[in-house]
Image (cartoon, rainbow, N blue to C red; front, side):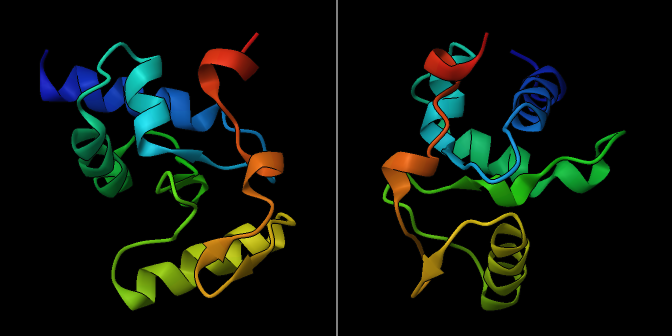
Length: 108
């Protein structure tokens, strides 16, 4: 699979995450048929600045609910998520089961 096509699939699916919800790199990987490529999903999210239309990258987190990455980016992601009503303490999403969006289950 070409990187460009893979990245576009990741970005398209990420755009579907509803406001106030989060998903994981692994959930995206499974949903696009590449269950072992969660690290590649993370790379695609990291490169979403080059996408044609905005990608709500901050809604993609680790499966444990942690915001990871460098401190300046995690602070920005936390701010954006909190604006959408997602509660975060110590860089961890609270009520993860309630706000988690599973594309394989929640997409219509």
